[in-house]
Length: 114
Length: 117
Image (tube, rainbow over all chains, first blue to last red; front, side, top):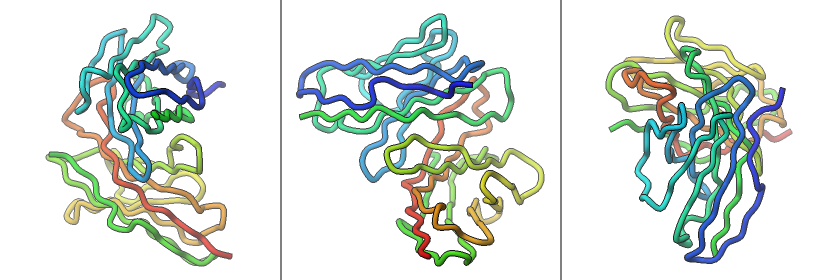
């Protein structure tokens, strides 16, 4: 049973560019959440997608946007990259129909902005 | 506002000794509480959770955690530490009142556990 997968593993971008990160949820899961983990910090919630809609959003600017596809996979897009966007981006999946569930995390995408 | 505090940046333990990683939280009402572990260059792995019931929760790899409502704490414990337990540990909380598909997890800043032989 494949867990949560993310691509790419590493990414280097220049300030001002745009980036797209991808996530496939664990089999049977239908909800995807994205987190940003800066170096030495705990993960910070970006947003969550369910039924192809953004359901909840953290304190991140509109430069951060996302999408969920009919197969439950998801993309995170970041526009106009800043140096401060350098971080590990984590995707987590869960099943909305299971009460008291935990979120399962992928290995992350390490984004470096130069 | 909801928050989680892990007061120790680092915990050092000798192999075979008991370990405790501390976590306190601030949230209105009763929360869902979680512990995750992160190994270098890896994502987070779920260890255990408290939802309701017995205040002592048992999880993966011999870890357990004690929920203390009066002290708003959820400390992670293990009776006998292993060198392989060395990793970064995160406590997280989710608001029980937010009944939706997942609700965001709010994480502490993490505690680096180092177990020496």
